[in-house]
Image (cartoon, rainbow, N blue to C red):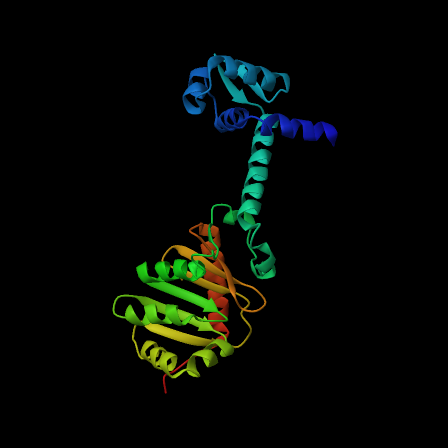
Length: 258
């Protein structure tokens, strides 16, 4: 294992090495090509390519360089490691609150997610992020164990130019109907031709909103307090969210305003 860790360290300590190996894994490159892409000097490239040749990660052919099969293997594996570590760094502060059992997709897809957490000056920052997404979207689909009154207000205001569909738990619906002001807003939504709300026949452990092409996940603690907002336009996460919504939609009943 020590020798393997030394090889990982060899790559990790030099961004230029990583970039050169990835370029060569993509195809044949001259030293001039590599210099243009990486900005590294010819002397630096010479040392890197020499080290790679010693490890038989690259080979020379007709005045250019190309990755060998093992070179491509190393490049792919190191990229996977970088993706894993990038995702871990993004999720480190919120992982304790994530219902990871329900997130049945590769968490590496959240490596580039926009994570918004409360601050002393903006304690409501996660909700404000979701409000922005909903306010700007032409189509909103959601499944959740709660519906924030501010979100409901934005949806009500956008009924003339936005499509809205949601599957909510019975507890979420009851919370809305117990308040006269929220009950009125909900009735307005239900009476709209462009909106619909359904009641789930099962528990929903997540609060997920699909606003156009962006998937937003609100993360709450055990007390129901919002701890973070995560949003991403990654296609795999979008596919997961749409699949989960369809599951809850099928296992739900329409809510009427009567």
